[in-house]
Image 1 (cartoon, rainbow, N blue to C red):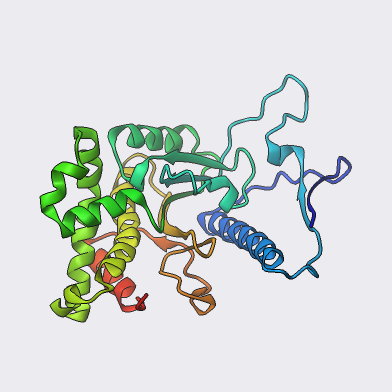
Image 2 (tube, rainbow, N blue to C red; image 1 turned 135 degrees about the vertical axis):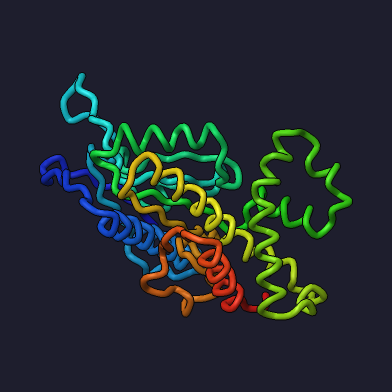
Length: 286
């Protein structure tokens, strides 16, 4: 099996950039689709399907971040800002199949908002406003920070074991709002009896991952609008099992829906609650 990165020095250089939030999100959606197709291609080969052709990935100097002219650096011009988790399993540029200089990426455990993160966001939406078209919060399934918050919610007595330093407690506290909202949505949709089922923690964990991104987007929307009106904030979650970005849980190919890749940031607590109920209603027993 061959994986070939092909560089054609005579191919025309495409410097086109998205001119709107819609175009930016479409580029990211298409990029993640390409990445997922590459992953699926390799999985088929590893499963024994040796009839698969070689995987050829075209690439150029711009994508690699190489200056076309020696000694001349590229102008800083990302088209999207992504606030994502620091998890090493979620390389944001790669899963979006994006080139160097496409994304301004801010990463922190649990994709939560702190003052340093807000400082980076404020810089990007002001200093890079000429190229920036979209702001996105990207969570991921199996998030360790969310898992810690869920376990603390389910077992408050273990607080001292899990949050042994002030910075860690601060991180978990920021995520706890999403966990409490997820638990409330589960109770409201399925009744309190759901807490006694064997799949309750899995459902709470899944719902919390998606709501954590939504809550962060809710806060980020207000911050962005205060310094750069007109920029749209969206959110989504990267499903590590399916290599797909989607704003709703994925349990199989039938859940890969068109139009649900990115969800607009909630503007009110009613929007947030409606989204929580929507996520819960789509859950399936593990």
